[in-house]
Image 1: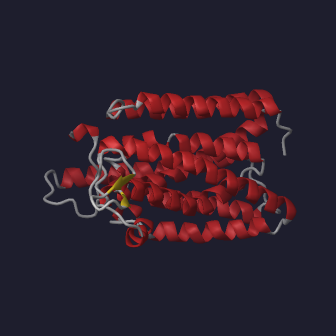
Image 2 (image 1 turned 60 degrees about the horizontal axis):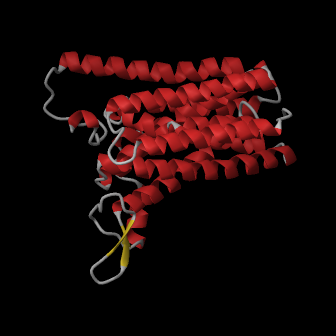
Length: 326
């Protein structure tokens, strides 16, 4: 564990809150909905995350910075699974592009709270009971097998949203950017936006059960864990808007994500006998995700060359309304 100066926590929260405020203000009305804006914001969040890693290096040393980058890269990679969920939820509820930023903003803000709970409780459990690391490792290995078998791009709906729709009074119509509206009979009902927000939060809690233990495989320092997680998930909205039109074409991505989970699980299980430093972990994670993306792109090109004008899009994930099509 590293001795964390109090001021470093202050710098972290100041940076996060400032960027969140700028992000929210820049998307008031209908501004910032273009694909170009999403690319710019995605770059801003990546630069912010890596820059904070530089600050960690300057204050806590090179080893701490390597742990930070490894944990950030794990969370950034696994957040691609969240993007698939965003795609499915927004498509199934017909949430228009102009309202998606608001839902994602509050969803990510809620994720910051739940991730803090998971990380601090998990760190306390590991500090008290060493066998918990084997439990985390087993969870990751089981999840890796599930992710390898299930292609998220082929999901047509979300279980959490389906359950909520059955148990909440919901209107089928989107009312601008409102989460709750009053019907003509005076009763308040949830809009598809509230359903989408609750679905995102519930699903993120389930994903946190996987991604947080994966981050524990490279460090158990709560500051490094939470700051790296925060900067990774804060860029989720922009990452989703950048990739929304192409997620369904990354057919092998889930194998790469399964590899990341499997590697993290094995790392936790064999840690008492074989220690894998953070820097090699970064290289392995980047290789697994990069190889799955490259394989997906090559397969897509082969399909395009073999079928220049496909009659159907069977096998692809649903594609939401994107700025390029508006």
